Image (cartoon, rainbow, N blue to C red; front, top):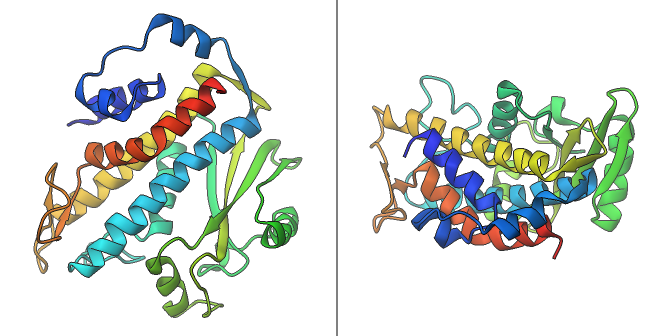
Length: 276
């Protein structure tokens, strides 16, 4: 499946189809339902909450089903995965960075995405100023934080990034540059920060935000597959609709990965979009 077909699937999903219908028939949403959604407006906080949930589902699936399961079956993941001599895939934080980079590079939607922490592996990801203060509050109450960044003139939201799987904990505890070695499952390891220039969005703009995120996920995953296809020292993992394979040394294609995301996220995303 090419990127155009994947984009069509994403758009169909956001118009309210169930995951099964999206990937099997792509039948259009009834016009009366479209009308209900298209008449709605959303505060930027509502939009942030919807895309943040999509991000939680996507990254949790990637962390558990791709990185966690993949490591058990011989796949490798590395912070230098993009270097020519490294035969590995992106770690979860770098998967998110890839999504953010794709959104920024395309420039079609003015959505910003950043993952930071008070104990980051890389110093450049350390929160400072107001974000550091709000993150300190988040550590106490585990709640999202919203504010307007006067300097950048951007509406901003921070959502807690929990350690949802063993790979998150082990990677940060064992990294040679880590500043904290006692992370445990369930800890808030950082926060995803989202930015947007408007305080509200239309249905079409909200759809564009979610599509930009999902297309970024598909593009980043495809980059991983392209890298894996060129492995020379390690066996090239099988990629396709047969994932997960019996022997475990396999990867899904981007559309199969997004299919799994849809199964987990589509209903809640639709309810939020329709404000049910």
